[in-house]
Image 1 (cartoon, helix red, strand yellow):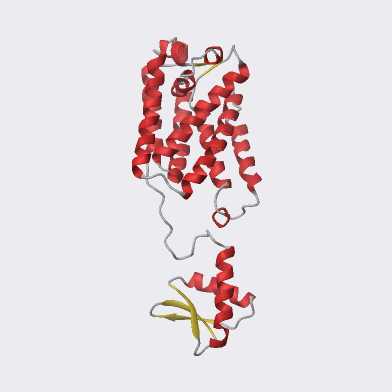
Image 2 (cartoon, rainbow, N blue to C red):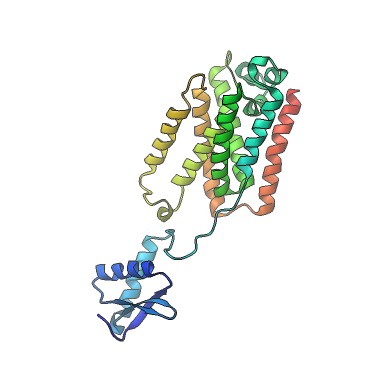
Length: 288
C-alpha cells in the first residue's frame, strides 16, 4: 500500500521502522514505510492510527529494556582499574618473591586457616596479594585485568573493586572456617572467581529485555560452574576457596544489581576505591 496516510512512528533507522512494520503486520493493520526528510516514517490509514499506536505501545512494554536499533547506547565507563590492580599484583610479587624462597611476607600474610579462625582475620586480605611462583602471579594478573575490568564497566571502578575484594576476603574466610586448620593458601584467584560470581549475578538480575532469555538463569550459573571446573581445579588449585569466592561474589552481586539501577556517584566511587586501598594497607600493617 502506498499513498496518503498518518505517520504513527518516525525513526532515523530503517531497521527500526521495519521492526515496527512487522508488529503491525502481525496485528493485521495496513501500513507502509516511507523515507522522509525527518527519517523513516511508518504510516497507516487514518482510521487505523489509534489501533496501530496501541499495538506499538504494547510491543514497547513487552520489550522494555531492549536496545533500540539505530539509537545510541549509553557507553560503559572507561576504566583502567583492572589493569592497574594487575600491575600492582605483579609489582608486589617482584618484592615478595616466590613462596619457595621462604620470604617473611608469606609467613605473615598467607591464608593460614588455623590462624584466621584464631582471630588473624587480616590474612584473608593479605593472602590475596601473595603468589606462589611467577606463573601463578601472571595467570592471576591476567585474569584480574580482564574480569575486574568487566565488573568495573558494569558498576564503576570503586564499587566494582570493593565488591571483588570483599568476594575474595569472604571466600578466604569461609575456606578457613571449612578447614579449621592445617590449610595454607595464597593468591588472588579467590577474588577472581568472586568477580565471576558478581558478573553472573549482574547477568541474572539484568532487566528482561537486556538479557534476552531471562528465564534461562540456569545458563549463567552453569557457565560460572564450568569456568570453575576449567580454571579452578588445576594442579595445586584451592578448589574450595574458588568455590566460596564464586558463591560470595554471586551474593554480593545482588548489591551490584541494585547499584546499577541507582548508580554510585563519582565521589562515592572514589571513596570506595580509597577504602579498598586502605583495607589492603591496613591488613598488611596488622600482619607486620
